[in-house]
Length: 155
Image 1 (cartoon, helix red, strand yellow):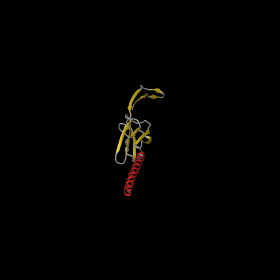
Image 2 (image 1 turned 90 degrees about the vertical axis):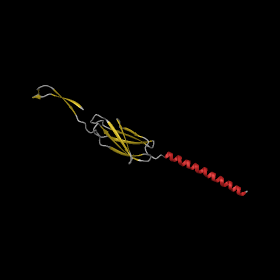
Image 3 (image 1 turned 180 degrees about the horizontal axis):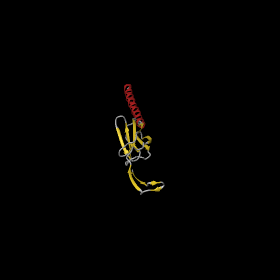
Image 4 (image 1 turned 90 degrees about the horizontal axis):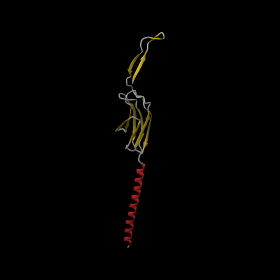
């Protein structure tokens, strides 16, 4: 940040000399840490990430970085707000989310949380119904074949 300071020398409660201005620029520092990290699973395989921040970045850029890890792979997103959406993730998988605030030189301390995506139970119900329906139809066909053979053997 750029600052202008005005300096007026005094001696025994009276002004001495002229009023001088001094321009000073502060160095870029580490951004304040992110807090209140919230994770939410939506539609079984989407993770919504939100957090709060003091908006003190101590530098010119104001970016939030979110990283999503599943143990093997990693996805990273950057945004000017601390709101992220990770879609089309693996079902029934544990994820670690790490969020930081970033300026042009420094990154805040990370805040991390873990979350798991859910298993698609609607798909299982459909498959179980389909298997039961197919099994019932197969039993009906086997019964008809047996019935026809039994009648033929009787004649």
